[in-house]
Length: 431
Image 1 (spheres, one colour):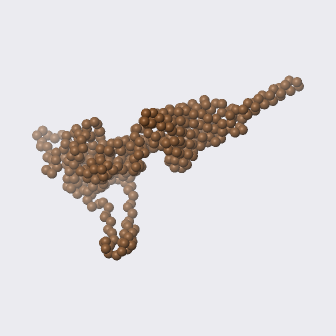
Image 2 (cartoon, rainbow, N blue to C red):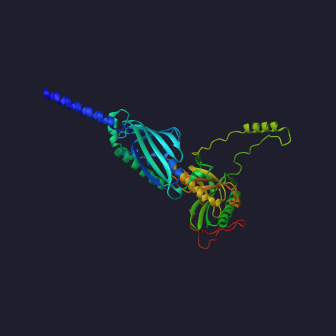
Image 3 (cartoon, rainbow, N blue to C red):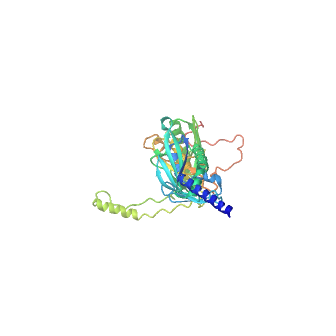
Protein backbone atom coordinates (compact mmCIF):
# COMPACT_ATOMS: atom_id res chain seq x y z
CA UNK A 1 0.00 0.00 0.00
CA UNK A 2 2.81 2.34 0.88
CA UNK A 3 4.38 1.85 -2.53
CA UNK A 4 1.07 2.63 -4.26
CA UNK A 5 0.80 5.85 -2.30
CA UNK A 6 4.38 6.74 -3.21
CA UNK A 7 3.67 6.06 -6.85
CA UNK A 8 0.56 8.25 -6.77
CA UNK A 9 2.43 11.06 -5.03
CA UNK A 10 5.23 10.87 -7.59
CA UNK A 11 2.71 11.02 -10.41
CA UNK A 12 1.02 14.05 -8.88
CA UNK A 13 4.39 15.76 -8.51
CA UNK A 14 5.19 15.09 -12.19
CA UNK A 15 1.79 16.39 -13.24
CA UNK A 16 2.22 19.47 -11.09
CA UNK A 17 5.66 20.13 -12.56
CA UNK A 18 4.25 19.60 -16.07
CA UNK A 19 1.48 22.14 -15.40
CA UNK A 20 3.75 24.67 -13.71
CA UNK A 21 6.38 24.49 -16.44
CA UNK A 22 3.67 24.62 -19.11
CA UNK A 23 2.23 27.77 -17.55
CA UNK A 24 5.61 29.45 -17.83
CA UNK A 25 6.15 28.40 -21.44
CA UNK A 26 5.24 31.04 -24.11
CA UNK A 27 1.64 30.89 -25.29
CA UNK A 28 2.68 32.11 -28.74
CA UNK A 29 5.55 31.10 -30.97
CA UNK A 30 7.22 32.93 -33.85
CA UNK A 31 9.84 31.74 -36.31
CA UNK A 32 11.20 33.59 -39.33
CA UNK A 33 13.77 33.23 -42.11
CA UNK A 34 14.93 35.59 -44.87
CA UNK A 35 16.22 35.41 -48.44
CA UNK A 36 17.22 38.03 -51.02
CA UNK A 37 16.59 38.29 -54.76
CA UNK A 38 17.49 40.76 -57.50
CA UNK A 39 14.12 40.40 -59.23
CA UNK A 40 11.67 43.37 -59.31
CA UNK A 41 9.30 43.92 -56.43
CA UNK A 42 6.27 43.34 -58.67
CA UNK A 43 7.56 39.90 -59.67
CA UNK A 44 8.18 38.88 -56.05
CA UNK A 45 4.82 40.25 -54.85
CA UNK A 46 2.81 38.57 -57.62
CA UNK A 47 4.58 35.24 -57.27
CA UNK A 48 4.15 34.92 -53.49
CA UNK A 49 0.68 36.51 -53.54
CA UNK A 50 -0.86 33.89 -55.81
CA UNK A 51 -1.40 30.13 -55.78
CA UNK A 52 -0.77 29.67 -59.51
CA UNK A 53 2.79 28.49 -58.79
CA UNK A 54 2.29 27.29 -55.22
CA UNK A 55 3.73 23.88 -56.03
CA UNK A 56 6.88 25.54 -57.31
CA UNK A 57 7.60 27.81 -54.36
CA UNK A 58 6.06 26.22 -51.26
CA UNK A 59 7.85 23.50 -49.30
CA UNK A 60 4.57 21.74 -48.47
CA UNK A 61 4.91 19.75 -51.69
CA UNK A 62 8.38 18.55 -50.67
CA UNK A 63 6.85 16.32 -48.00
CA UNK A 64 4.18 14.82 -50.25
CA UNK A 65 4.40 15.40 -54.04
CA UNK A 66 0.96 13.79 -54.35
CA UNK A 67 -0.75 16.29 -52.06
CA UNK A 68 -4.08 17.44 -53.53
CA UNK A 69 -4.35 21.20 -53.97
CA UNK A 70 -7.63 23.00 -54.70
CA UNK A 71 -7.91 26.77 -55.21
CA UNK A 72 -10.93 29.04 -54.92
CA UNK A 73 -11.69 32.75 -54.88
CA UNK A 74 -9.74 35.30 -56.93
CA UNK A 75 -6.49 34.32 -58.61
CA UNK A 76 -4.66 37.20 -56.93
CA UNK A 77 -5.35 39.28 -53.83
CA UNK A 78 -7.42 39.05 -50.65
CA UNK A 79 -9.84 36.13 -50.64
CA UNK A 80 -7.67 33.74 -52.63
CA UNK A 81 -7.77 30.34 -50.93
CA UNK A 82 -5.94 27.05 -51.31
CA UNK A 83 -7.06 23.83 -49.63
CA UNK A 84 -4.74 20.84 -49.32
CA UNK A 85 -5.36 17.16 -48.57
CA UNK A 86 -2.66 14.60 -47.93
CA UNK A 87 -2.41 11.02 -46.70
CA UNK A 88 0.86 11.99 -45.03
CA UNK A 89 0.12 12.40 -41.32
CA UNK A 90 2.70 15.19 -41.02
CA UNK A 91 0.67 17.28 -43.50
CA UNK A 92 -2.94 16.15 -43.17
CA UNK A 93 -5.67 18.53 -44.34
CA UNK A 94 -5.86 22.29 -44.16
CA UNK A 95 -5.85 25.55 -46.08
CA UNK A 96 -4.08 28.83 -46.81
CA UNK A 97 -6.24 31.95 -47.18
CA UNK A 98 -4.85 35.32 -48.23
CA UNK A 99 -6.21 37.86 -45.73
CA UNK A 100 -3.96 40.90 -46.30
CA UNK A 101 -2.08 42.13 -49.35
CA UNK A 102 -0.15 45.39 -49.26
CA UNK A 103 1.79 45.48 -52.57
CA UNK A 104 5.49 46.03 -52.03
CA UNK A 105 5.20 45.64 -48.26
CA UNK A 106 3.62 42.43 -47.02
CA UNK A 107 1.33 39.49 -47.74
CA UNK A 108 -0.44 37.64 -44.92
CA UNK A 109 -1.97 34.16 -45.10
CA UNK A 110 -4.24 32.58 -42.49
CA UNK A 111 -3.15 28.96 -42.13
CA UNK A 112 -5.41 26.12 -41.01
CA UNK A 113 -3.97 22.67 -40.35
CA UNK A 114 -4.27 19.75 -37.95
CA UNK A 115 -1.34 20.79 -35.77
CA UNK A 116 -2.00 22.26 -32.33
CA UNK A 117 -2.58 25.98 -31.95
CA UNK A 118 -4.79 28.64 -33.46
CA UNK A 119 -4.58 32.04 -35.14
CA UNK A 120 -1.81 30.69 -37.38
CA UNK A 121 -0.40 33.29 -39.74
CA UNK A 122 2.23 33.07 -42.47
CA UNK A 123 3.50 36.57 -43.24
CA UNK A 124 5.80 37.59 -46.08
CA UNK A 125 7.43 41.02 -45.70
CA UNK A 126 9.31 42.72 -48.52
CA UNK A 127 12.11 45.23 -48.12
CA UNK A 128 14.18 46.93 -50.83
CA UNK A 129 17.91 46.42 -50.34
CA UNK A 130 21.19 46.56 -52.23
CA UNK A 131 22.66 49.30 -54.39
CA UNK A 132 19.99 51.73 -55.59
CA UNK A 133 17.44 49.50 -53.80
CA UNK A 134 17.35 47.12 -56.75
CA UNK A 135 17.14 43.94 -54.64
CA UNK A 136 14.29 42.65 -52.52
CA UNK A 137 14.68 41.01 -49.10
CA UNK A 138 11.91 38.48 -48.41
CA UNK A 139 11.22 37.69 -44.76
CA UNK A 140 8.80 34.85 -44.08
CA UNK A 141 7.41 34.66 -40.53
CA UNK A 142 5.13 32.07 -38.97
CA UNK A 143 3.16 32.81 -35.79
CA UNK A 144 0.91 30.50 -33.78
CA UNK A 145 -1.15 31.01 -30.61
CA UNK A 146 -1.51 28.08 -28.16
CA UNK A 147 -3.52 29.90 -25.51
CA UNK A 148 -4.02 27.66 -22.46
CA UNK A 149 -3.31 24.49 -24.42
CA UNK A 150 -0.37 23.25 -22.34
CA UNK A 151 0.37 20.40 -24.72
CA UNK A 152 0.47 22.96 -27.51
CA UNK A 153 2.93 25.09 -25.55
CA UNK A 154 5.23 22.08 -25.27
CA UNK A 155 4.75 21.39 -28.98
CA UNK A 156 5.89 24.98 -29.58
CA UNK A 157 9.35 23.99 -28.39
CA UNK A 158 9.84 22.27 -31.76
CA UNK A 159 8.46 25.04 -33.99
CA UNK A 160 11.85 26.51 -34.72
CA UNK A 161 13.22 23.18 -35.91
CA UNK A 162 10.11 21.89 -37.70
CA UNK A 163 8.39 24.93 -39.23
CA UNK A 164 11.66 26.85 -39.38
CA UNK A 165 13.28 24.22 -41.58
CA UNK A 166 10.21 24.20 -43.85
CA UNK A 167 10.33 27.98 -44.20
CA UNK A 168 14.02 27.91 -45.03
CA UNK A 169 13.45 25.23 -47.68
CA UNK A 170 10.50 27.18 -49.10
CA UNK A 171 12.49 30.41 -49.40
CA UNK A 172 15.18 28.46 -51.22
CA UNK A 173 12.57 27.32 -53.73
CA UNK A 174 11.29 30.88 -54.08
CA UNK A 175 14.79 32.17 -54.84
CA UNK A 176 15.46 29.45 -57.41
CA UNK A 177 12.12 30.04 -59.10
CA UNK A 178 12.63 33.81 -59.27
CA UNK A 179 16.01 33.23 -60.92
CA UNK A 180 14.23 31.58 -63.89
CA UNK A 181 11.97 34.59 -64.53
CA UNK A 182 13.28 37.43 -66.76
CA UNK A 183 14.38 40.45 -64.76
CA UNK A 184 11.84 42.95 -66.08
CA UNK A 185 9.43 45.11 -64.10
CA UNK A 186 6.15 44.67 -65.96
CA UNK A 187 4.20 46.65 -63.33
CA UNK A 188 5.10 49.92 -65.08
CA UNK A 189 3.51 48.81 -68.36
CA UNK A 190 0.17 50.63 -68.19
CA UNK A 191 -1.83 48.69 -70.81
CA UNK A 192 -1.60 45.55 -68.68
CA UNK A 193 -1.50 41.93 -69.80
CA UNK A 194 -3.92 39.06 -70.35
CA UNK A 195 -4.22 35.56 -71.77
CA UNK A 196 -6.16 35.07 -74.99
CA UNK A 197 -7.19 32.05 -77.07
CA UNK A 198 -6.43 32.56 -80.74
CA UNK A 199 -8.23 30.56 -83.47
CA UNK A 200 -6.46 28.64 -86.21
CA UNK A 201 -5.90 30.65 -89.37
CA UNK A 202 -4.76 30.43 -92.97
CA UNK A 203 -1.71 32.57 -93.63
CA UNK A 204 0.91 33.55 -96.18
CA UNK A 205 4.44 33.52 -94.74
CA UNK A 206 7.79 34.91 -95.88
CA UNK A 207 10.98 34.29 -93.90
CA UNK A 208 13.70 36.93 -94.12
CA UNK A 209 16.37 38.78 -92.17
CA UNK A 210 18.01 42.19 -92.08
CA UNK A 211 20.75 44.08 -90.33
CA UNK A 212 19.63 45.51 -87.01
CA UNK A 213 19.10 48.96 -88.43
CA UNK A 214 15.67 50.55 -88.60
CA UNK A 215 15.88 51.39 -92.31
CA UNK A 216 17.13 47.92 -93.26
CA UNK A 217 14.38 46.21 -91.27
CA UNK A 218 11.67 48.44 -92.75
CA UNK A 219 12.99 47.82 -96.28
CA UNK A 220 13.03 44.04 -95.75
CA UNK A 221 9.43 44.13 -94.47
CA UNK A 222 8.25 46.27 -97.37
CA UNK A 223 9.96 44.11 -99.99
CA UNK A 224 8.59 40.82 -98.70
CA UNK A 225 5.13 42.22 -98.08
CA UNK A 226 4.90 43.04 -101.79
CA UNK A 227 5.36 39.35 -102.59
CA UNK A 228 2.51 38.50 -100.22
CA UNK A 229 0.26 41.19 -101.71
CA UNK A 230 0.91 39.87 -105.23
CA UNK A 231 0.00 36.32 -104.20
CA UNK A 232 -3.20 37.56 -102.54
CA UNK A 233 -4.20 39.51 -105.65
CA UNK A 234 -3.60 36.61 -108.05
CA UNK A 235 -5.31 34.08 -105.75
CA UNK A 236 -8.37 36.26 -105.03
CA UNK A 237 -7.56 36.58 -101.30
CA UNK A 238 -7.79 39.35 -98.73
CA UNK A 239 -6.19 39.98 -95.31
CA UNK A 240 -8.02 38.35 -92.39
CA UNK A 241 -6.20 40.47 -89.83
CA UNK A 242 -3.19 42.73 -89.29
CA UNK A 243 0.27 41.78 -90.54
CA UNK A 244 2.32 39.82 -88.00
CA UNK A 245 6.06 39.95 -87.48
CA UNK A 246 7.36 36.75 -85.85
CA UNK A 247 10.81 36.98 -84.29
CA UNK A 248 13.20 34.14 -85.27
CA UNK A 249 16.56 35.64 -84.34
CA UNK A 250 17.48 38.76 -82.41
CA UNK A 251 21.26 39.01 -82.26
CA UNK A 252 23.53 42.02 -81.86
CA UNK A 253 23.71 42.65 -85.60
CA UNK A 254 20.93 40.62 -87.24
CA UNK A 255 17.17 40.51 -86.96
CA UNK A 256 15.62 37.39 -88.48
CA UNK A 257 11.83 37.28 -88.73
CA UNK A 258 8.78 35.94 -90.55
CA UNK A 259 6.18 38.17 -92.15
CA UNK A 260 2.82 36.48 -91.61
CA UNK A 261 -0.41 37.66 -93.22
CA UNK A 262 -3.66 35.98 -92.11
CA UNK A 263 -5.82 35.43 -95.22
CA UNK A 264 -9.31 34.46 -96.35
CA UNK A 265 -11.17 34.27 -99.66
CA UNK A 266 -12.02 37.65 -101.12
CA UNK A 267 -15.34 38.96 -99.86
CA UNK A 268 -15.82 36.41 -97.06
CA UNK A 269 -15.01 38.77 -94.20
CA UNK A 270 -17.53 40.47 -91.88
CA UNK A 271 -19.98 42.69 -93.75
CA UNK A 272 -19.56 46.43 -93.10
CA UNK A 273 -22.05 47.88 -90.66
CA UNK A 274 -24.51 50.21 -92.37
CA UNK A 275 -25.80 53.04 -90.25
CA UNK A 276 -29.00 55.03 -90.88
CA UNK A 277 -27.73 57.89 -88.76
CA UNK A 278 -28.75 61.22 -90.35
CA UNK A 279 -25.97 63.49 -91.53
CA UNK A 280 -24.83 66.41 -89.43
CA UNK A 281 -27.25 69.27 -89.61
CA UNK A 282 -30.36 67.11 -90.02
CA UNK A 283 -32.24 67.29 -86.74
CA UNK A 284 -30.94 68.24 -83.33
CA UNK A 285 -28.15 66.46 -81.41
CA UNK A 286 -30.58 64.40 -79.35
CA UNK A 287 -32.23 62.94 -82.45
CA UNK A 288 -28.82 62.13 -83.93
CA UNK A 289 -27.70 60.31 -80.78
CA UNK A 290 -30.93 58.30 -80.72
CA UNK A 291 -30.45 57.25 -84.34
CA UNK A 292 -26.89 56.09 -83.61
CA UNK A 293 -28.07 54.03 -80.65
CA UNK A 294 -30.78 52.38 -82.75
CA UNK A 295 -28.31 51.57 -85.52
CA UNK A 296 -25.88 49.98 -83.06
CA UNK A 297 -28.69 47.99 -81.44
CA UNK A 298 -29.63 46.48 -84.81
CA UNK A 299 -26.11 45.12 -85.44
CA UNK A 300 -26.13 41.33 -85.00
CA UNK A 301 -23.53 40.01 -82.54
CA UNK A 302 -20.53 38.31 -84.08
CA UNK A 303 -20.60 34.53 -83.62
CA UNK A 304 -17.69 33.20 -81.54
CA UNK A 305 -14.96 31.40 -83.42
CA UNK A 306 -14.72 27.66 -82.82
CA UNK A 307 -10.98 26.96 -82.30
CA UNK A 308 -11.56 23.27 -83.09
CA UNK A 309 -13.34 23.86 -86.38
CA UNK A 310 -11.29 22.61 -89.38
CA UNK A 311 -9.77 25.33 -91.52
CA UNK A 312 -10.96 25.85 -95.04
CA UNK A 313 -8.29 24.83 -97.55
CA UNK A 314 -7.77 27.81 -99.83
CA UNK A 315 -6.75 27.72 -103.46
CA UNK A 316 -3.44 29.58 -103.34
CA UNK A 317 -0.81 29.92 -106.04
CA UNK A 318 2.40 30.89 -104.27
CA UNK A 319 5.28 32.75 -105.88
CA UNK A 320 8.82 33.67 -104.93
CA UNK A 321 9.60 33.24 -101.19
CA UNK A 322 5.91 33.06 -100.16
CA UNK A 323 4.66 29.97 -98.30
CA UNK A 324 1.01 29.08 -97.68
CA UNK A 325 0.51 27.62 -94.17
CA UNK A 326 -2.28 26.79 -91.78
CA UNK A 327 -1.47 28.03 -88.27
CA UNK A 328 -2.96 26.09 -85.33
CA UNK A 329 -5.13 27.55 -82.60
CA UNK A 330 -3.12 28.63 -79.57
CA UNK A 331 -3.19 30.42 -76.25
CA UNK A 332 -0.94 33.43 -75.77
CA UNK A 333 -0.03 36.11 -73.27
CA UNK A 334 -0.69 39.49 -74.83
CA UNK A 335 -0.47 43.24 -74.34
CA UNK A 336 -0.53 46.41 -76.39
CA UNK A 337 2.29 48.85 -77.02
CA UNK A 338 2.30 52.39 -78.38
CA UNK A 339 5.64 53.82 -79.47
CA UNK A 340 8.50 53.27 -81.92
CA UNK A 341 9.12 49.66 -82.98
CA UNK A 342 12.62 49.47 -81.38
CA UNK A 343 10.79 49.31 -78.03
CA UNK A 344 9.13 45.99 -78.94
CA UNK A 345 11.91 43.65 -77.68
CA UNK A 346 11.48 45.01 -74.15
CA UNK A 347 7.70 44.61 -74.32
CA UNK A 348 8.17 41.00 -75.44
CA UNK A 349 10.32 40.35 -72.37
CA UNK A 350 7.77 42.04 -70.10
CA UNK A 351 5.06 39.79 -71.54
CA UNK A 352 7.15 36.67 -70.97
CA UNK A 353 7.93 37.64 -67.35
CA UNK A 354 4.27 38.36 -66.60
CA UNK A 355 3.19 35.01 -68.07
CA UNK A 356 5.82 32.99 -66.19
CA UNK A 357 4.87 34.52 -62.84
CA UNK A 358 1.34 33.28 -63.46
CA UNK A 359 2.42 29.73 -64.10
CA UNK A 360 2.41 29.79 -67.90
CA UNK A 361 5.21 28.13 -69.85
CA UNK A 362 6.09 30.17 -72.93
CA UNK A 363 6.97 28.33 -76.10
CA UNK A 364 7.54 28.89 -79.80
CA UNK A 365 8.27 32.48 -80.92
CA UNK A 366 6.76 35.83 -79.92
CA UNK A 367 5.16 38.04 -82.53
CA UNK A 368 3.54 41.43 -83.00
CA UNK A 369 0.56 42.62 -84.97
CA UNK A 370 1.36 45.86 -86.77
CA UNK A 371 -1.71 48.07 -86.42
CA UNK A 372 -0.16 50.82 -88.58
CA UNK A 373 1.62 50.81 -91.96
CA UNK A 374 5.27 49.81 -91.98
CA UNK A 375 6.29 53.36 -92.86
CA UNK A 376 4.86 54.57 -89.53
CA UNK A 377 6.50 51.97 -87.30
CA UNK A 378 9.09 54.43 -85.92
CA UNK A 379 6.54 57.04 -84.90
CA UNK A 380 5.66 57.73 -81.26
CA UNK A 381 2.01 57.02 -82.10
CA UNK A 382 2.69 53.63 -83.74
CA UNK A 383 0.47 50.89 -82.31
CA UNK A 384 1.24 47.21 -81.88
CA UNK A 385 -0.22 44.18 -80.15
CA UNK A 386 2.37 41.79 -78.73
CA UNK A 387 1.80 38.02 -78.32
CA UNK A 388 3.84 35.25 -76.75
CA UNK A 389 2.35 31.73 -77.11
CA UNK A 390 2.05 29.64 -73.93
CA UNK A 391 1.50 25.95 -73.40
CA UNK A 392 -1.88 24.59 -72.35
CA UNK A 393 -1.69 21.99 -69.57
CA UNK A 394 -2.43 18.50 -70.85
CA UNK A 395 -2.57 19.58 -74.49
CA UNK A 396 0.05 18.68 -77.07
CA UNK A 397 0.88 21.85 -78.94
CA UNK A 398 0.34 21.62 -82.71
CA UNK A 399 2.79 22.85 -85.28
CA UNK A 400 1.97 24.92 -88.39
CA UNK A 401 1.09 22.86 -91.47
CA UNK A 402 2.79 23.92 -94.69
CA UNK A 403 0.34 23.58 -97.57
CA UNK A 404 2.40 25.12 -100.37
CA UNK A 405 4.94 25.01 -101.75
CA UNK A 406 4.83 21.23 -101.54
CA UNK A 407 8.06 19.20 -101.80
CA UNK A 408 9.14 18.92 -105.44
CA UNK A 409 11.66 16.92 -107.40
CA UNK A 410 15.08 18.55 -107.89
CA UNK A 411 15.16 20.81 -110.94
CA UNK A 412 17.04 19.56 -113.99
CA UNK A 413 20.30 21.19 -114.87
CA UNK A 414 19.84 24.23 -117.01
CA UNK A 415 16.34 24.95 -115.76
CA UNK A 416 15.70 28.67 -115.57
CA UNK A 417 15.04 30.21 -112.18
CA UNK A 418 11.72 31.90 -111.56
CA UNK A 419 11.96 35.65 -111.96
CA UNK A 420 10.73 38.03 -109.30
CA UNK A 421 7.73 40.19 -110.20
CA UNK A 422 8.65 43.47 -111.83
CA UNK A 423 6.86 45.48 -109.16
CA UNK A 424 8.59 43.75 -106.24
CA UNK A 425 12.19 44.52 -105.26
CA UNK A 426 14.63 41.67 -104.88
CA UNK A 427 14.56 39.74 -101.61
CA UNK A 428 17.27 41.12 -99.31
CA UNK A 429 19.95 38.70 -98.25
CA UNK A 430 19.85 37.37 -94.69
CA UNK A 431 21.97 39.46 -92.37
